[in-house]
Image (cartoon, rainbow, N blue to C red; front, side, top):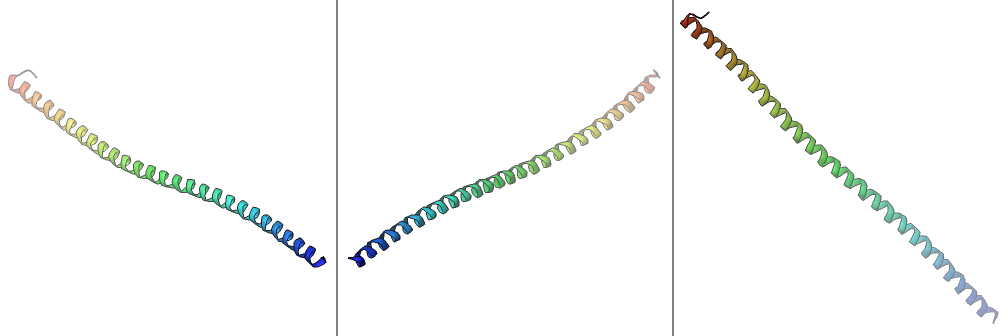
Length: 98
């Protein structure tokens, strides 16, 4: 019977060891799951940030284009004003209202 007790004792030890390893494995898998979740959140943040950078670049280009159009309109307005002033002066000269 002493051999049988030893076998039962070994089986109990093995079961306890397997349970401990199962707990360690479960803990490691939980840690891995958390790490993957954190990495996925960071990746999504990087994607969002990249999209934001693209939007910023697009908006900056649109702003530059709008500013260039505004500058061109201001130049045209100055030229039109100068031409109008010249035309008024010519009409006054012609009428003798200088």
